Amino acid sequence: MTNTELFRLFEGEIVLRYRPGKGLYETRRILKHFHTYLGEYPPTAEQAKAFLGQFASRKPATLARYVSVIREFMTWRGENLDVKVKIPKILPDYVKAGDIDKLVEAMRNKRSHKRSTSRDILLECAPP
Image (cartoon, rainbow, N blue to C red; front, top):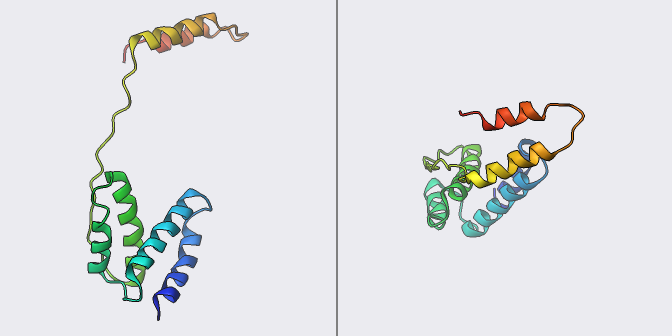
């Protein structure tokens, strides 16, 4: 079976797994890039690792997405791809005290028929 036929068969698999949208688009894009990289050589775990090695300088989340797509393809083909990417946990941005004060002031000034403004302010200002 040629690579074109192989990737066309896998196309049916990914359409069933992903909803139309960015996930499906990204998966197709990565697989097309992998197909171009392979040419007419049959896909192997070594070639998949060499392909993924091109993206070692990318951010960990991007590399993890690439690894996930290629691993899924290789597993579907019946080969094991033992590549793992550790994604560091990202902390939320720091919120300045002045920004919180502005939010509380905006809540105080908001007119509401629910009479829940004082409760909401207490919840916002309560220590964790």
